[in-house]
Length: 228
Image 1 (tube, helix red, strand yellow):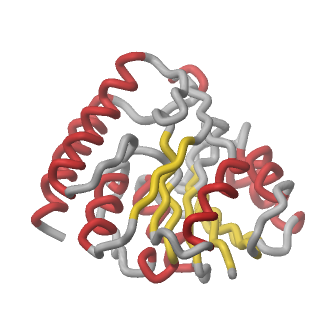
Image 2: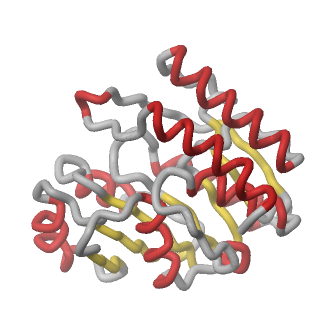
């Protein structure tokens, strides 16, 4: 079994190597490949990635010439992924890749096609407004998809490769979270949610999602229930 770990990167020169080091320090139950897509970062991300390219043999690194958004970076990464299982790993330090090991288990044992890592099942600490917005968007998504998730906006979406390859993502930016969820629900995938750890970072530390992304997520939830 091969696990493809997709890493979209934008202006994360301070953390990207640390995240990759964490990924490769884990004893995985499968073989892994890492597909990094630098979305035209304006900091030293490209330089940092090129300087460490030779450190790991199973890393692919791609660069966008123009910033397009997280959804576009994931779409590029999916085009190069070969895994029997596919997941997403953000390039900051909010999510601990060690949690992915337990998220793989329901897929490896045949109990699930998709596993979401829920920050809220674990009672992760984050600002009240952040929690409220995420829960609102999750409940709205559940209404349109018929799912019973607690954290639709989570980064950790682990899925069988055959489902990942059928996604055909259209969202350029953060609308990809509800789009992925809607399309996996439409494919009749079996979902499981498990608790994960989470370290919230603020805007001074580099957090990028904002209130306007929340509005666009609402539109995406409705749109991808009825459209493509």
